[in-house]
Length: 633
Image (tube, rainbow, N blue to C red; front, side):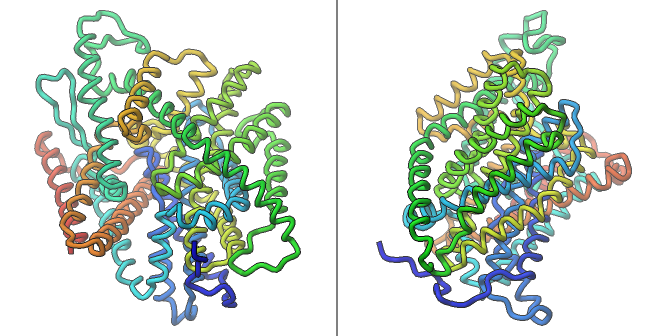
């Protein structure tokens, strides 16, 4: 294979780390990270922000030339690297921390931020020895889609202004649309349609810009698989349960109060389908991890080999584009993280014994190292948005919970400690996927790896407490587990831990869900997206599917591959703006609700019920038409 030649030559003496790049990256990172936290708490999904941050960095630096002077492509890359860390922190926090609140604990912003910080540091450090194998040696094998796209955006900086316009346009539209729903309450944020003949079958939709944008970014195949899982739950399993259970006069476990005949579709989903979906997601995560074992083993083997080579070459001068942070930083960082966890009783959220903290710290380091490797390899093939972080977290929680069960730590203390272990590992795996994309972009451009690794650490430090504050505020304002922020992934993690340590899980329903995931794999369907569709409400899946359909129609109308790529990129940037705009509005509503001690009541407009749904649908169709029009131009 020909030697890779970066866009910026190896010997170019560019200063590729600057204060202005770090400040701009940190500011926009907190903005997009907070939006991602809101999105994840609502629907259990987060997206990669690498591409929009790359575009915004170019636009901002070009606009500020009269004030801060001309910036280089490496400045823009460092800004994007610093900012993108926040999204991964959001994933780790919202997938796990709400479970502590649901158990009745009240961890402070500081404690949540410390857990995110420790996980982020581990994720960055464990990627130091893996870069030369996964990014450099596998350059022609692993595409790292977001990293490659970010590099292309930065290289084509002369087009940055026009591209950035789509992000800001989408952000404005998302902000206005969500404000009309959330602040003014002009129409409902959910609409439903009953299906005749099928008992209690219900089609639903949350007509929001964020979910539409998520669907466009995921594309028609993954969006279709996810909505298929939702249809199975709401049009298949719920009517089946209603049909066979309509003559039961007593509650059916795990329900203890109402009979099935008395339960609406939403309650059947809450009491039965959630466990089926939990089993499907858990099995999907296990399948993904098992399939990644060869990758994990090979990467660990190569990492050890690279470490030995690095020691042997320690005295040799390397090119600027080949220098990583010293391996001693990795070992020192691991020791510091472990020491903080062991010597600080309150870091895990509640008072724990010395022995518990030692075992929890060992679990964190071992699982984080394994899943950093897995995460980096997976995102190299499918991208950050499709990274099965939740599956890795479930495996971590299963392993930790089984260990705690064997040691007799099955009380609430053991459950809370297990979820904090999962938090740190989840953040580490998420950050690893993110920094892999950043390192790929840097490799193509010609950045200095150790500078990128340093700024990723800075991004973790600067955004950890800000994202923790956003999540804490959303929880205080709306309550985790409520319809406003159901926190589905955290509820799933809570269910897994309680099932293993408490022994009261309806295992029959869980194993039925696991069977669905196995069947999906056997027929060639990715099990994790399908399982997520079963687990989440159909109303969440339908707008995502519509977004995927829009992308499919837009790309099919393109006359050549270049036009198709251009339209796809425009839609991804616009969709990212939708997500950011709605997410920021959600955070703003949370701030209002926290201060006023009440949600916005709107302007008092009351529609007749059917007309209100119709208005909501028309508004959403207008948003769909806008997305189609802008991406088809």
